[in-house]
Image (cartoon, rainbow over all chains, first blue to last red; front, side):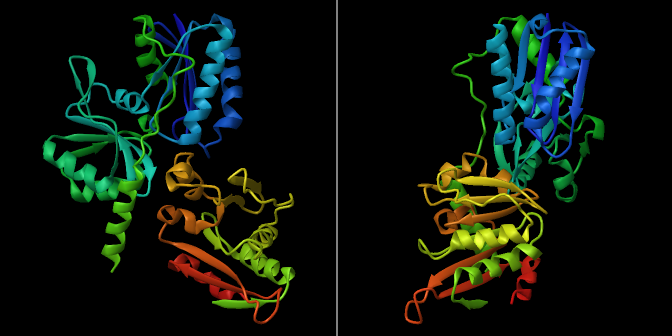
Length: 237
Length: 151
């Protein structure tokens, strides 16, 4: 089974073709979030270089979030279009799952963090046990302070990965012990990682519906925001 | 800071001065009753940003995007009923980017405005004359101290 996977949930745009247990090709750009400009030509280029036609693809995988609102909508639209046009199934995979999967065989907690702006991150906690990725929390949008206190309660080693790492590295280092950070080349969502997770779903018959599928954006409610604002201004006084 | 202008050109000129000196990522909130000249002030900013395309009010589109010396996102949130509505369409990704953001009727989405910003309020002063406007410019955060250069 050949699948085309696509991620546009962050600044980076990435697409890959995977055939069963083999990655045939992958293109990743991590520059200035210009998904709507580069995605289609990336896919075209990838397929051409692999001497493949879009009809020879058996299924599609797309990141379903959390992440950039605009990025997710572009990625979802592209994959839905390709899926509808070719009549092949597609499936959405969490961008955080894909990031965590970059750190397969890591002991302790794997903590992917994506920048959710205003001092928040999108995150979920994972462990890698018995050759499998296990999610041990819900997907969350959470302030970095709250994440630190949550993780400190677990009292385990933590490895961070994701585009919010550079922004929060210092804060994490000065408030936590026993932490590590993913190497730079793994530090972004890879469509190959996303695609592998999606391929497993598609081969076991799991796919999403063209008409009801929507990415999930995870954001704070108005009430939470106003509470934050209140706390912020009381700190300033 | 307060400025008194007596015609549209005066409003645009002040906007242009601001557009000349704004930095990437700056946020300019703009308030004032209908017909006070908010869009003309925005046109001035766009001119200062060397944007050639015509600036139209984004009342119906919520946001218009322009390319110039810097990228400009021009919001009009008059029709936004609830801050959640605009937050749900990726507002943060716009205003926390490298572009300059102008937000007309920013008071409607007060809870979403970052602590550091420029606030421009335009008021009519009918007691002096029908075309007279008082333009009050305040800034929050040291990054905006360049506002003091406005004349």
